[in-house]
Amino acid sequence: MDTMAQWNEELQRCKQNLQAKAREERKVRALQEEVRKQEGVVRECRDRFGREEADVDQLKSASVARLWNRLIGRLDERLREEEREAADAWLKYDAAEAALRALEGELAEARRSLGDVIDADLAYERLLSRREAWIREHDLAASAELQRVSESLGELRAMRKELDEAKQAGEKAARALASAEERLRSARNWGTYDMLGGGAIATHIKHNRIDEARAEMHEAQHALRMFEKELNDLRVQAGVPDVEVGGFLTFADYFFDGFLTDWIVQGRIDDALNRVQRGGGEVRRQLDRVAADQAKTAQAIAEQEARYRATLEGGR
Image (cartoon, rainbow, N blue to C red; front, top):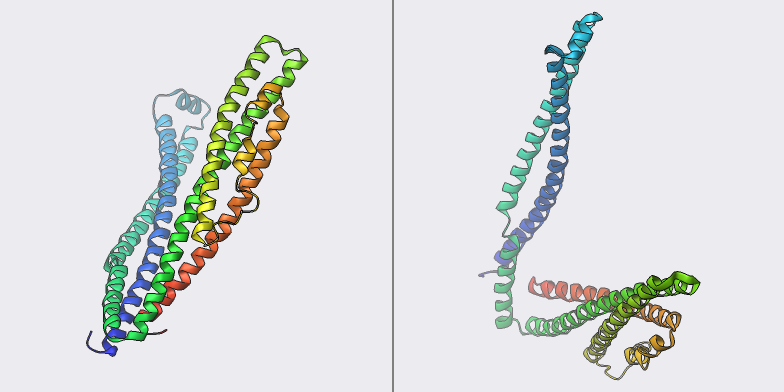
């Protein structure tokens, strides 16, 4: 890169191509949707034309309809009416086909235009890479700024990864608790029916539901502990390893301590259901906090990336 003027000229060209690519991508997406809808219109018009044409053929053939209309003296009138409807259907079908061909032509042209700038992102990144190499060799102040931003981005991206893993673990825990709640509700309902004289079948189904609920509770226990671990990892990542997160840490052990067998032995299904519901509420609350942290981290990453690019472009 010989001069700043050349750098600025190439930068402007890259940005113009990036804007053109975004514009053509929007156009292609919009036209694809229009083509999809118009294809539906064409199918409807073609089907209608086929039905109208069949009506005309039926009147022209040796059919009951033809004989009846001839007997009452309305054959010619009826035939003209059906032919008019068939002609109208054909015209609409032809117009729909023409509109579809026009849209397909526009889409092909948009795709060609997009193809002209499809590598705009790659060209821009290559230009910034060349600029970065030049800065690190010739501009110590800008180089130090790039290093600071790079370190910040590294930390933020690591935090984003931890947050993503925590979200996945939390969603798995929420699903497990929801499934356990569903099984417990079913067991309670069948238990009520059993007490009202539901008989051996109701008793059998109730115990099956209890067995299913116990399996779901074991799964929920494991999922909660994994979620707890991910939340703990987040605190370590943030530099506060000993902070308890809203009373959630050790929640999994408290939640299930002496509980999995106790509620089954004593038949306290309502107590089990209440605990599962409280657990689900706590998991949702923690997931809301994770989502808020994800949004903040994404914003911080965007800001640091913009700062990095601004430094590369010479506009700190």
